[in-house]
Length: 168
Image (cartoon, rainbow, N blue to C red; front, side, top):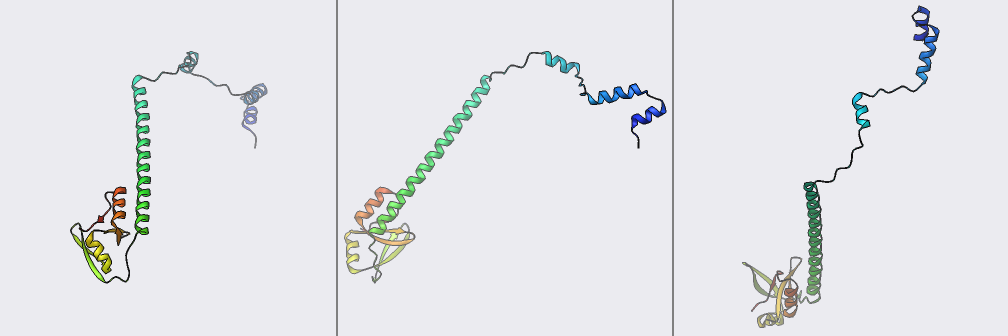
């Protein structure tokens, strides 16, 4: 199969010189033609960077301020959660260290939590101490716990919202 240039040469439409020129043009880099508008743009001065408008500055500063406020609120929330966790750990340790529940107790002692009546089995001595106001009730993991009043006051000092019942 012959190339197009060979076919044109045989047909007599082009001469050998024209074929050679076409081949040379192919080898050269193709010239790019710029439109008049493109040339005018190229001749213009390079664009200068525009300064931010006052409104754009205002919005960017406001966004930075909002980000700082969000970060500060997040930090405060994390700090509060950490403090609450530490306080709860201290309260749990206090209850566990001062727990006076007796598995062999047989006397049922009723006490009121809100509008509910709860009970805990106590010994005779614990019943007398409850009546005298020396012992108190609280909860740890859903379990009713009998603790000394001193410990109950410490718990209330750490967390005033903790359920602690001191019978009178």
